[in-house]
Length: 317
Image (cartoon, rainbow, N blue to C red; front, side, top):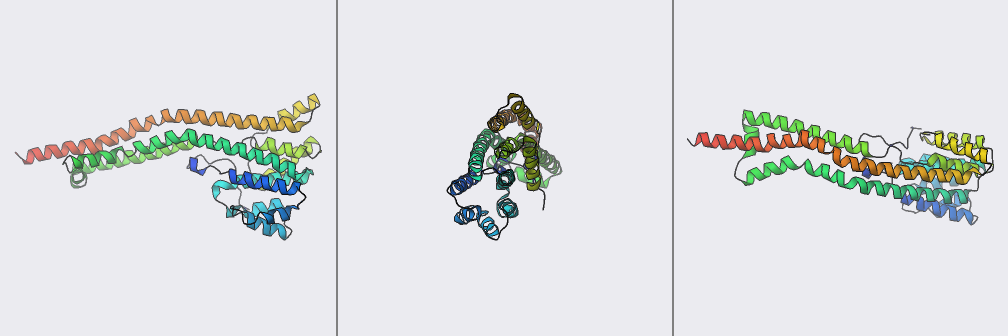
């Protein structure tokens, strides 16, 4: 199976590529209600067949044939848009963890649905924070084209100068190179502002599910690692889980609530860091504006305009 990751590839990822977790959270919530009512897992997926998500039908078919639900979800993720796959990979990992740990599926899924909704809220906040800087980047890249049109409206055939004269051709080549550099620079800046971890707190949340089965903490950690590997999810930094488990051992208190609290704290930190990156992005976008787009405006708009004026003056003498 092709390995997939919850880590965002920083190059080429936009706010629109963020996973849409609301639909997955709704389905997981419905599954938890059906399972709590005594419906078997395979039948629960069949009852949801016809849902808006294209993943439900293939999972229901595989589960009906006896395939474990976690395996069925992993096998069906290719049928959903790439932006939604991380949520379903996380669901497969959570289902596998609950099954192996002997944890009740209904409460585990209800808790996981709440986690997905919190992540969905975080994604919306990040998208809103990035909307203004991204719109600014798109707007300023249109300045040279607007300048060329404005010159034409003033009566100067700047397009003819750019394509029909040697100095104009040089200006065109330099301007196009500057615009290409600005576009590439803007995309890298926007990509760098996107969150690297699309599911902060997932490892803590899965470990909380694992320990709710009543097993040993070491076995719970092993189950989580196995589920993450099977789902192709990068485990990330396990420091948060280890520190919470160490606190649980020292204090002699159940680890479940501590782990869920740590997961919520990691999600809060991810939201704060994303907001900070978005605010800095607005300033960093001034660099390609000043170093690439404004010089491109000069060589594509102002220089051809001057060439056209000089040419018409000389020819009129």
